[in-house]
Image 1 (cartoon, rainbow, N blue to C red):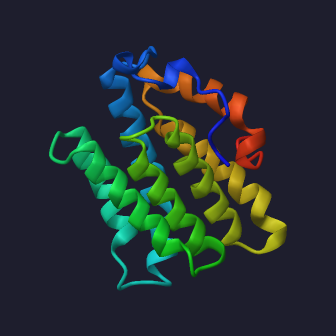
Image 2 (image 1 turned 90 degrees about the vertical axis):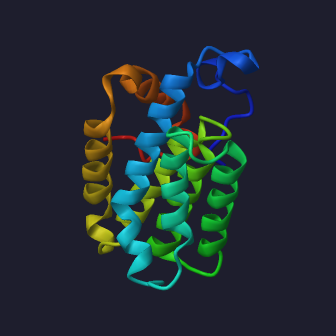
Image 3 (image 1 turned 180 degrees about the vertical axis):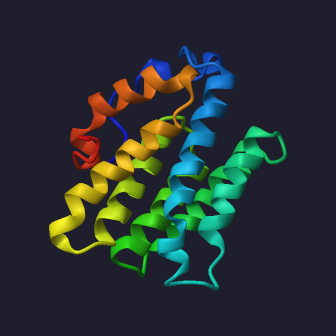
Length: 171
């Protein structure tokens, strides 16, 4: 579970009664796509013929550019999650990260899901004794990619949802 029971109005668009602007929603989608893309190789090394996670990331970016609808981006995210179902470990988490990135167009709060699953993917890809350090390094890398306009929002969202995101944002 990566979404809270009570949604944060800062992650709900203005037209739906929240305070999130379209431009910040787009930045969240771009950042989520970047987080997912950073670990995509962990999926593609196991499933090189399955393009669903890559397509979800591409759809997230295409949604930002106005080239696909929210429903198309969300559907691509769902297909990426489908690619994860029969897998385990890093490949599974990487596919879920891509799926979450695709879903940001529908619900902005999925941005944290993309980041959290990417961290889980990195942690699963290394020997057990190295997983915490690898996760912290990935978390820091993600934070370095945050645009200034959404930095405080995402960092606060990480703080608030860290417990339901497997405590991966302790970096």
